[in-house]
Length: 121
Image (cartoon, rainbow, N blue to C red; front, side, top):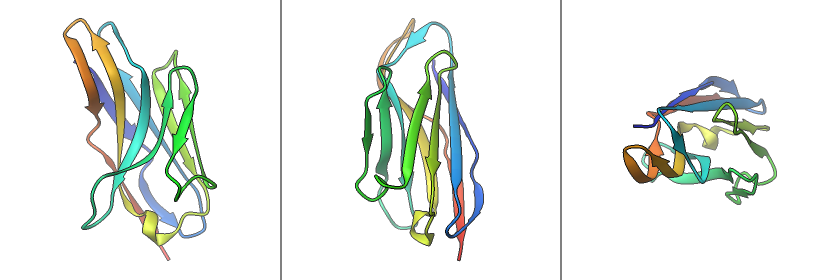
């Protein structure tokens, strides 16, 4: 079973930056890519950004100019850097790995438990 552990959430000042990281661990697995979703209060979970193992990225329009996602394949760790944070960015941020293949089988997406980001105005 693949486990994902996020870190880097917490309190961020509006206008500041946040950096999240997420490491995937488990026995003998591969994945097509990793990414970040978020769920704000009263909202549905939405895509923030994702990146393939080959480095191709996809961003939500709302963060396209302010976010950078990167992936260290060797460490199986994905990072999200977001600048010029606004209060609307407050949410629980979830890491995921998709197209996961392990000795236990194939999983479309594996999810972390989430890390909360609070934005002070």
